[in-house]
Image (cartoon, rainbow, N blue to C red; front, side):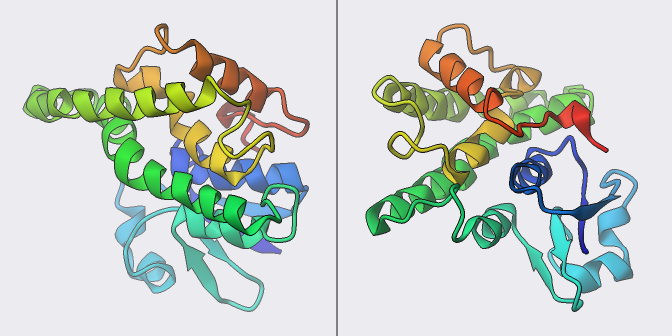
Length: 202
């Protein structure tokens, strides 16, 4: 059985948990307390020298890290990865968008607020991330006004990638009241058969 090392309240870890549950893939979950330094131990660094979660360890001892790489691995040849070549490239397009234009602003803001308690020493950093976060949400809102999911009409790992931190964006100070298309999309994702929340961690 595979083992996933991560923190379920991390969006990057949650997206892996969500896909494995959607696929009905048996796995063990090993909690990693980042703030306690668990990801900096020699044992953990042997699995991922970059010292980040999530990490998947396979039965043969091989390890795979970076959340979107993990999603692509498990989604291949499933309903969560389009068969069309162009649409597969669009999945990657949105995953790169998530990592470069969305996560650095929305996820990092949430980390500062939820994990660090929004200390005064990070106030300027938090404020500096606002513009980038709102810009990413505007891109998503415009796109989702035209279609049900990020890649055509098919729920895919593109949606999982961006759902993970968007559905908790308010925890970092990004209210979604002015983004009705995003809110409707969040509802469609949450209504998918097999969907699990962060709180359903087992």
